[in-house]
Image 1 (tube, rainbow, N blue to C red):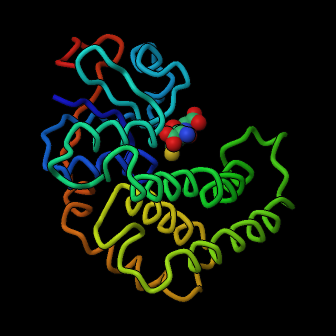
Image 2 (cartoon, rainbow, N blue to C red):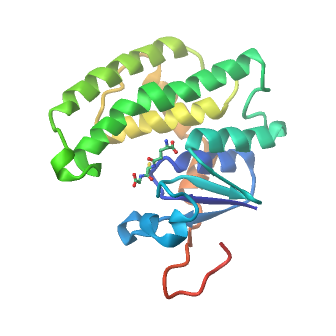
Length: 217
Ligand SMILES: N[C@@H](CCC(=O)N[C@@H](CS)C(=O)NCC(=O)O)C(=O)O
């Protein structure tokens, strides 16, 4: 059984959505930041960075949303959510996953760090306009790369669509403009997928807290 550690409306929505698309059973443990779960000894033993998502499967613990989703999709090739390793379509899938992680999400994360995540003395509010400038360039490239196609790669839904959709939703929630041809329509189509809604409504388990008896995790 896969065990996913995450916090809803964070990067952990990516592997959760994928697990629902794959139709694989999993346990979802909520790492509640407001309760300090991410700094607990229990969770730091799983991911010393204190970040979500993290995945446990048998003896393996994986962090990094890109690695987790690639691992999961590769393990279930029959679901057709990731092209075969070494194929041209796999190259394109990986290109868009890396684009989401390194080009599209970075300006958003820069804004997030300087809006609320960094200690106050390290925040530079003026960086916000640079983040918008950089995001705008990435969004224009994405729109151009997407063209009028229904999905990012070939003619089917892949892991790349999860990363691009999740990151565009993040942009919308941060009030970054995605006013480019194709992007709004694409987002509406992807957001309507039933597996995404199932992931958002998935039941949540709690990690053991100090003084509580350890559960199944
Ligand atoms: N590169 C990592 C980033 C993980 C990350 O920064 N997750 C955020 C939530 S979206 C987090 O756990 N932040 C808590 C912290 O920075 O202490 C990934 O894609 O999985």
